[in-house]
Amino acid sequence: MNFFSKSIIILLFFSVVISHDVTADDHFYDLSGKIEEIMTIADDLNGGNKDFLMVKDEDSAGNCRKYASHDNTSLVLVRLTDKERIYSVALAAKMSGSTVDISLDDRRVDADGYCIIRSIRIK
Image 1 (cartoon, helix red, strand yellow):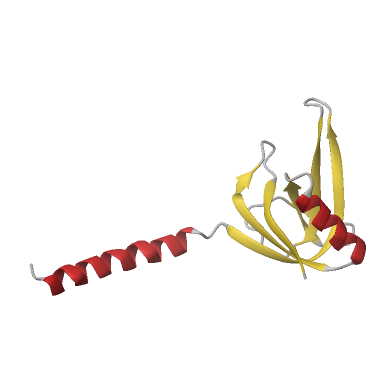
Image 2 (image 1 turned 180 degrees about the vertical axis):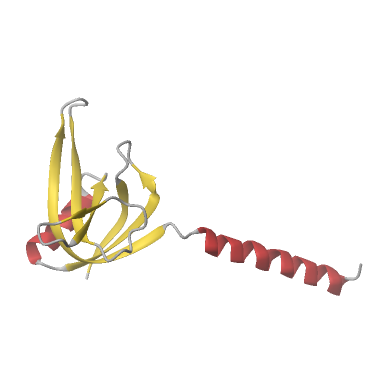
């Protein structure tokens, strides 16, 4: 096999690997909108608290849990695990009425099956 043939084979191999990797990340979702609610729920069994936020969902949150609001708007309930930074950003966005971008991975869930937020950004 000459150098040219080896180069073509290597190029084909990496193009297949890269294209498979791009299609394998279909569990990442981005939500954009205003935060409807921020909740802290006492976890009496473990002695801690669990923080959540609700954002309107337009069928873009994959398998993350969704709930219907009083006006039948679809809301996605997202678990906050970073007790300081993410909660602070979410609270600032809620108080100011700002729009946020939230990134989720519907495979990254807590023990109760709630999607855990990956990132949040105030617009």
